[in-house]
Length: 350
Image (cartoon, rainbow, N blue to C red; front, side, top):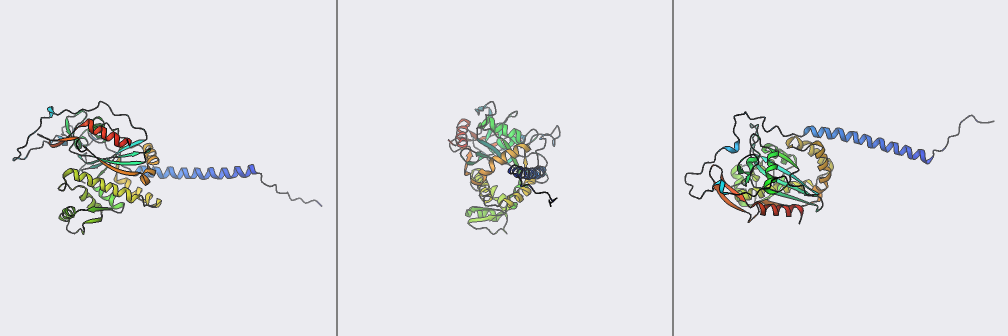
């Protein structure tokens, strides 16, 4: 008697392969959809720069036009701006292959201010993908430079006022120092404090003079000579010290804070990184497009974890002179050719 039950055919390798491939593609598609949704969520957290003209009435003056008055007992020589020659270059330089330059801007803005103030810190973060290096270059705010469309002035005034902002600052860096800036990231005092706290603080070695200064600012801080774990408020106070080592020491302290943050981030687990990103993004402002953020993140993230870190200061030693200019004050007049060469050699890894 013949059985009516159908015999099951064994699946062919072709059908098995197609089933596996279909399942894999479905999984990839789900991951891509989830990643896209999550990326859009992150993009909405980021602040974008406002129109630098928007918050200024037509008759308002630029903050940098406020005239500096020399102290009554000042007896030193002053320089005439017309006698100071700055050997600028006419155009934005061509980007260097395998190098990404991101300007980190610390803005001198308080909670009750709603316009561009002077940039308290300007640190160029250079990623050299070929050399596997990260370079933090401080541009001192008292550098006397030519600002496009304006008169010669201190570098930190390029960011300030109506018509200022990220674009004018990067143009100023380009024509004076020959560096193409790919993007900017800005944080104000409140944002800086919150970023440090979000990342769990920073380990900084303090000198006796720095400890004394910090305790004068807040006597409740229990700090000691040597390595201390600083909170956001403490790190901000430390990064803004000018009394010790003047502005040269101040920029060095800023680089130390960023270096400490970078080293600390290398020990974070992936889940901690994602959690930190969500908390930090609302605290920063950037002129990067969403496409640029994705591109730079994919290119630079590996370097953040393993790139060799070094620091630089502009103006470099022996590549500037001091001057006092009426209505502006004390400035650092850079030898632009020397500083451009030092910058180019360092950034390109020569």
